[in-house]
Amino acid sequence: MNLAQQWQQALERHDVPGGAVAVYRDGKITDSARYGVANLKSGVEVNAHTLFQIGSNTKVFNVTLL
Image (tube, rainbow, N blue to C red):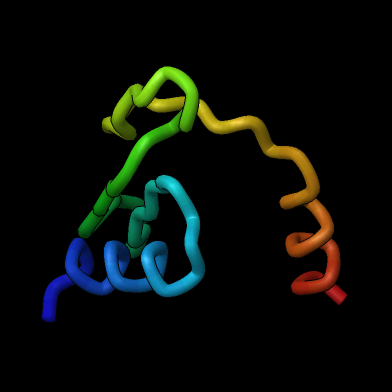
């Protein structure tokens, strides 16, 4: 199963409307995937240039650092 398939399954399993992920290794993006919509009202699909509001995601970064 490739990254795109895994990403789609994860978002569907957790009822997330859309998202993007990338694997960064040795200074380069080695793989990426996107799925779904960025906005439920407009139905705009996630693409390589979609900007997401960060919201409460910084809490996850802080916990990871601790």
